Length: 381
Image (cartoon, rainbow, N blue to C red; front, side, top):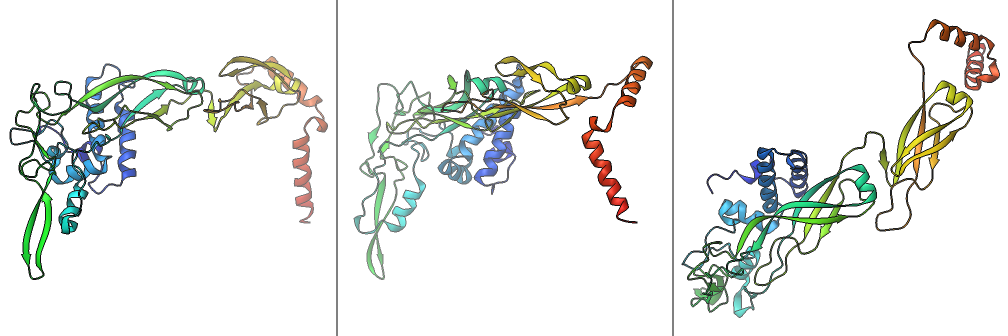
């Protein structure tokens, strides 16, 4: 494990980083090195795996505590588990429980069963989709790192054909009690069993594949359904695809964060779509039938006569479907009027002739502006 980089260094955050800072760093790095955005780049793929492994630990409160105290040895499922009975980290021991039992385990207080089933922790992945895929829904394959039960030993940690034995030192409780003479009399305290590391079991012949931990880290690829209407940065929960539980406990979940690529024309605002539609001066002045793009294809729209720059019209029901609901948003189209450039002399003459023939009633905004300007200077006389 000497070749592994420090997880905080991998994430680019200090050791006192908050959960939000760690998550923000993960989202940034996962997008930067995601295989979909770096096709064929082996270095980016390796960094993507490294970032996922680091985040898997630093986002989990218990794993982070073990990592801060013991480094990689505290969280690597392939570490420890030798003939002496396994690593003290191999059973997902709750350090808080051990602490409480040591300082609060007086008078035969009942302790939690170290072999009780425990749910696995959740893991995360990022998926990149297009604007249209987000609007209409799609199926995507997602690759992520997770901890699974070892297939060779069935998650027991013991070599095939053998089994773990009840610890003779603690009788399977995972803890030993110590009687101490104090000025107040005999006091009984409890501490983690040194022989089994708190698991209550001893593996005399560990599995060669998982080294007695019962679990191995691997990369998995699954297909997920992305519903229509999903938005950027939303999360999909895939039940049971997270890290393996211990002692027969259920798997955790997979959290898939969705990254929607920007569209060159459309902009999403809630479940509405906005876009700009360039038209000519003549089309704006006289009105015209234009073709407007939507996520469903092209539609025709009749531009009214005298359309002004910035005017907005609505295409009802042409927006984003309401996720997990009925109906859709609308599409709003803002008109932009393009002033012609590179005019020929003939075109200039025609425009000049038109301008000379125009009256004040043809330019209501211009007339209003100069009327107000005239009033402003008249008031100063």
